[in-house]
Image (cartoon, rainbow, N blue to C red; front, side, top):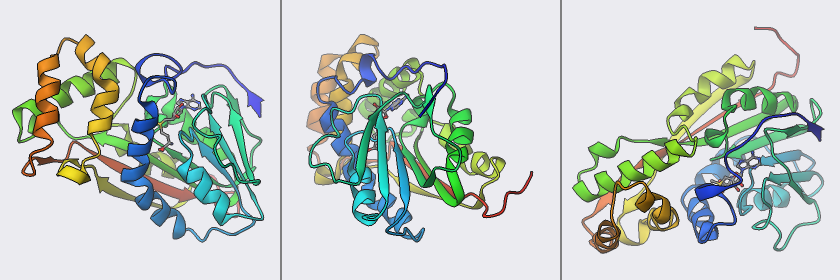
Length: 268
Ligand SMILES: C[S@@+](CC[C@H](N)C(=O)[O-])C[C@H]1O[C@@H](n2cnc3c(N)ncnc32)[C@H](O)[C@@H]1O
């Protein structure tokens, strides 16, 4: 790994991996998007010998999946905080604790680099695309997946409008850009990647067992209350609302974009 200087807001505060209920939040994320992610990865022709890098690996579902797909290769799973990555580690899965805004890899190291729900939190998110692309070997793939918030005010449920407005406010205050995902396809193209493609996956709030948002709101509850935008009563009422089978909403989508480093170097 190579060192460089920058900072990240993720290591402390409401987004830290050490916060209560973070494991629930990470598992909820995995439950809602893993099938989409692995569907995309499956179409890229992963080879058993590939070296892969999972940036901001979280609870590690994608790192483990890649390790199973690349038994003759190696998967590096890097995170600021690796406490959720340690269980049942495959022999070809290497866990690294590092800040990806400060540390990096030699150019051309990986056949595949994947990042999900990480770059939107980083101050140098555009630059992270350039850096991640530089770590690809010729023909290697960069896949980036980030959340894109739909307007809170467009929810059909007034209480959900307020809860989501508070949620979006606290993420903005924590330095996240939840609209940046829209620039992913063009950023990949600008970084001289070929075969740029993208797709979107709608999130689900409510819908009973399909709900993926209760753990996210639970996890953020202290910050939401501290914002002064909602009250304890709102949160209790929200819990009740989610038990109503007619309450179904789309608070966010995930935009996935991927591109490939040309086999032969080309200029812009
Ligand atoms: C929302 S979680 C997503 C986890 C996983 N990528 C997923 O989609 O299931 C973001 C993860 O990125 C990690 N992270 C945030 N900033 C980071 C940084 N600067 N360097 C390394 N990891 C970082 C966090 O610790 C956290 O585990």
